[in-house]
Length: 591
Image 1: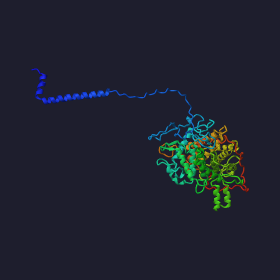
Image 2: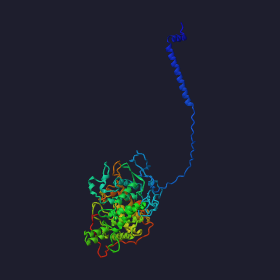
Image 3: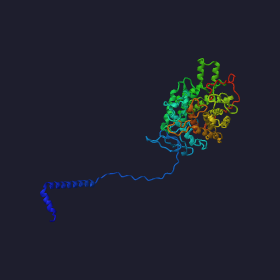
Image 4: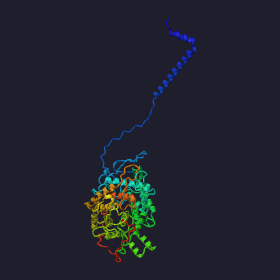
């Protein structure tokens, strides 16, 4: 019999009606749910949504701008800028907390990015400049000119010298104490735990705190000489230690420390004044005031200058005239006599005791103060010139205490080093330059000839190194015969400059490892490093490499203020008809 499906379902329903009914009910229910769900989804998709959007404006037309030469001037003090090295492309600092501060940076004010004659910062010094950018007031300090100087001639700063300056400034920041000062006795406290130290561990106790004021001032001058002051907003990244520093804060802290150290009489050293410290501190405060015109530095600067003026010795050849300076101030000599520490003969000897080195440092401070608008008696400058005239021999060489020492070696600490007598000629040249401004003074060319006969040289076993000589020789010859001098030849300057750069750059520490504190410092000692250590060596070498822009030319825009001073051909006699006696050296140093 054939299968009949209809009959089969009918029989199943009759035999099991509850099962069939349940299955049918659930099938129908499921179908209804599916239809409802699909219908709702379709409704959601199909419901239109109206959104009102502002019409995007058409982009502005592209206008082709002519290529424009970039004029680089001093970095404005109200803007952040990175002070960096010259090796790589320009680097723009970020706020990225993951920034790698070990990374080499380029310099946005690098000399190769500047048009001829453009400025790349501001600097200070004894000269006439176009104004200190950002202060809103005229400045008597010279502007920084990387490269070839104001007349476009050679003999100026290079990428190598500028990179060395920045590395030196990094080293100085690294070794500044928390209170703002620099101390040879505490260098190791700031050295990193890794790698070599900046001074041998067995020499740590050989440095004293007696020269902290002078070393702090010398270090500050290195920053001021690069064109920065306490208001500067630039930051300097210490790549060796991966740290970022505010240059303005570094300078402000150092200046505040000096200001707080100042005694009532204007001096800085206690318990008795030491004239090297006093001259350097006065110079730093005067230049800080000259750069900022800030009242914060005006009073301490003027007090320091007043102290120098009052410390000047009387002229033994002229009862109403003035003379030079040495280690002790005039008032200190008087006080020692009054306490019974000096008999009359010793008192008279010390009252006319002066030397060429201290006298020149004081002249630098007085000249800087005068240009900053502080009060400086003309008689003080004339007295300094009279002393320098006295110690100058007939052949143009200059003595330390008197003319018959001209060209002679000086004994004292560091006798294993070669002594360079021409350093006194450099000092004498610079005093004459800043006091009389007489480019025709025959003694200047005589001195220049002595300098180029003994150019910078490291020598065997590094015993010809003399950073002090190189600094003052560079200053004197740059003024007399450099790119901005009224002279045209640059005969002496070019000979000296090439040798100086070779020696100074060669001696800078170039350790490239990270977290090593020696990088950028001048750690090799010279004849005069016994007291100041690497703080002294680094600061004075940075100043030497800033000679290209730190001081405007003193012969340009100045009238001669004194008659030509002829060299001395014999010892002149004092008012009593006696020869000035050579005082005993206090420490055997000829500097």
